[in-house]
Image 1: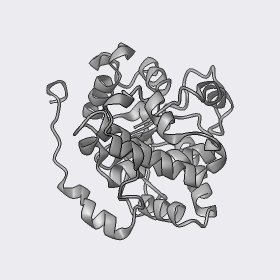
Image 2: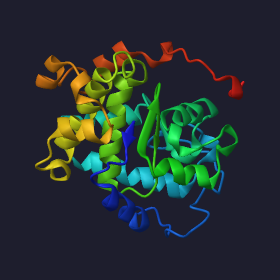
Image 3: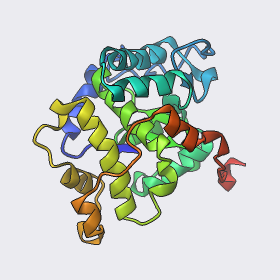
Image 4: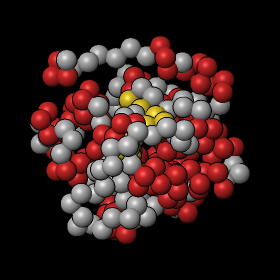
Length: 253
């Protein structure tokens, strides 16, 4: 999960009104995947291809172009992971019912109800809090990010998927959350160093995710970096997303 950073909140919101997805801030339709076409043969796999649109595919495609133009191992492995279908990508407006319920649980102060799924109000509420979200091999991203920042968000979320963060994240809070987010932000900073120049990543994660520093194990604070860093083919073989078993909330049955 990638929160809209507190320290960068104004810049992120400004980007929402000037992003390259072709929609003004006041556009009530916000594309909403309105052509309802089915995406086939593309550069990435959507969570719900029946709600695809040219605008959304172009939005993701520009971020993939940024990854393709970067010759770092991180960018290239992330791009290959996406094109190989190891992860599926969609927008936060198209959360599945179980994933919407998980977001509701993670954002208890947002005031979202089960019946809000798929509404413009819910989309705006969630995107005010999150740049990206993942569960199993599903990645959801907010609209309105620049191609560079969306590419960084994809790097962040792919790292969560390959590490199955939806499981490990909650094992030993707040230490486990710190470990998973620090690792993902570390990779973001490797890909987009200008965005995090001069930033203390440990403090950044603790502050933005409102973690209690005193309860994070001292050994982890001293050495927060842990595997798996890169989404290599070997890492994906170990990850084996086909073995994931999920609990479907009662409201979605």
